[in-house]
Length: 358
Image 1 (cartoon, rainbow, N blue to C red):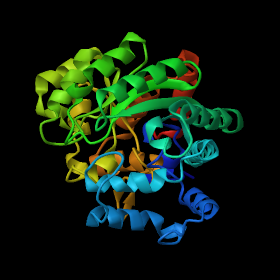
Image 2: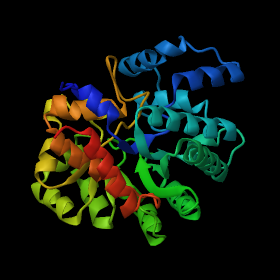
Image 3: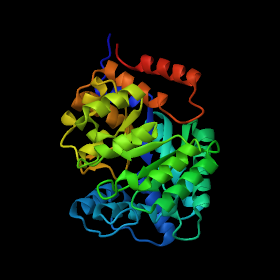
């Protein structure tokens, strides 16, 4: 008797990677509830309703001002970061996130965060990195998670901050940190502001992924600069298809684009069906899929999570399972993590083939 599996069953059972995942945007509501109780903070809703509450606040633009950007929708990150201001909080949050990922059959994760957002009480940026690396180290030992930590700079901060974060990433490279990124409000802050900081990271041989092409207006130039400077990966890259020659260059250079389907559809892309991942894939660009923020990305009725991204790639974007296999493989092959070698990738590929339909 042949047992038929639906796409969600397959997506859940397939081993996955998360190369583009923000710590502060991916907190477990139960973690927030516990830390709020420790801090004597009364949450506006029960933890089970927290995600819906935060999406409501985002849609209503209820909060003005943020440590990430002056744009109102970034205040949700400030809400989350108030629970990430001690070493214990950062370590526990990192381990907790890895546990959620492992439970969703994610076997490789590179978790990114900006250390400067965790210095509002008594921590230094170095303390913050130490804490997150410690939490990830525990996840490696206890959960057998592969991967590491990516240090982010914020594009709304001055270039001196970017240089400091690049130096910090370099100091921790090989000690738990695997890469460097620049994130934040691309609509208000172009990438060229931070060119000297990017060059500092490259000079120190830090693997690099850069948020570029996430906003639809006038952001192709950010992708071009990232590629010209030598970025290994591009975060989001939604506008890449607006420049065919640039897309051909990205494909020729083997730069991987970290696509975040649900995050993009919940933000600037009208639907999964028109997400540019299809055009990029058919042009030979190495694309992989990621959740971006487990708590804050998506919409009221559609959360971002790893198995869901795989399911939506097949059902909503229209990829075959053979094509999805290549996308999943692209993810692990683009990892910055030293533990992801040829032998591990070969074993991963074998695991894929035992799960995916023929």
